[in-house]
Length: 152
Length: 152
Length: 88
Length: 88
Image (cartoon, rainbow over all chains, first blue to last red; front, side, top):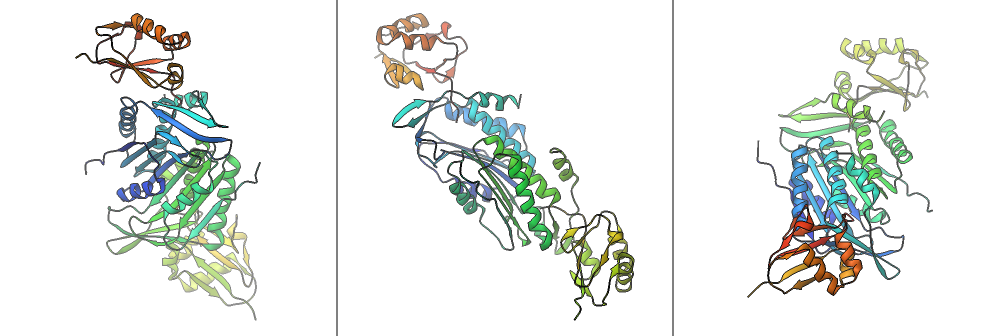
């Protein structure tokens, strides 16, 4: 058996192209039958003019890398991609892209789902939204804690 | 509330570009916070030289469209994409792309997962593989029946 | 002019039948047992047995039917023999 | 030359502190209570209360600590005040 392909985990300060990232990821795993991805983007409509994600460099990326190791240990994956923006984003711009490549579909779905639940509830990001010209900080959502409790 | 965007369901006789399809799908749903996708591709390695999916026109696409309606009725989605190849495919070529756009991540994950389980176990395709120059038909997999039983 | 009845064989049944489809030109209603007799004249017993197996389903004009032994084909009908699907 | 102690405020604490970071130049070990006193000199009571709340966690030099009241900052340390994360 070949050595496992390392996970690709990046914290990005500027915008990225999720379609091209997914293309490269799928091409890098031609032996995987399935690739599951989650793309999170800034919602257009609803009055949010901009979104800012603040991170803390000594914690944020290391925690994302630790999450990737957890996911790899828990499911049998050929590859794992975790891309996350920081900084200011505009509506329709991508925030997060998670992709899992696996021989078996079920592993890929569960891994991507788990990674997203943990990114959403536990990762070191502080979020604020600009509405009607005013920035306001976003509190944690109860739903996020419920999502993560599914895995415990 | 706007009228729901119709599902995009296609049975394709020649290869397609999953990255561009996903880009267009995400762009068509800028109001969705999340897009979950599954890409199935012909596995490279393992000795399979080609894969053929045979369909039966009076049944296959209508059943895919019926599945899309089921999925839309069961989860709250902004959009649903189901693309499926028929004909002969080579290693690393895409077979199926399912994507679900939703306001809530959980709906998008469940919808894509459900659609794949049902496509894999119930859709009207007959599959054969070419190994060492010889075509052989593929029997249904027990795992597919177990996957679908999760939803019943 | 009378339209033939069309038989369509999917999956491995295509191999047993020697091709994806064939016609029955003889006019008039064709019940299941007569259809089997026609298949027996043209093909191996393996095909005749296969189409009778419970797991091989039948569609007539694009509709999957519940009880194949009760069917009667009319001129112009298309009957498809559907072995277990192998999925997408 | 002595390195200052650096304070980093995340999320809404940045607004209360009037900026993302600031230094404490005074040399020597700085226990939690003295740190609070320094904050009280510079900032509103709202900030002093906020950093003491259970849900505000503390990292020293990139390591989240279990008991903030037991900490003693050394020269050159970076302490970050981490309100509840709002997730990715």
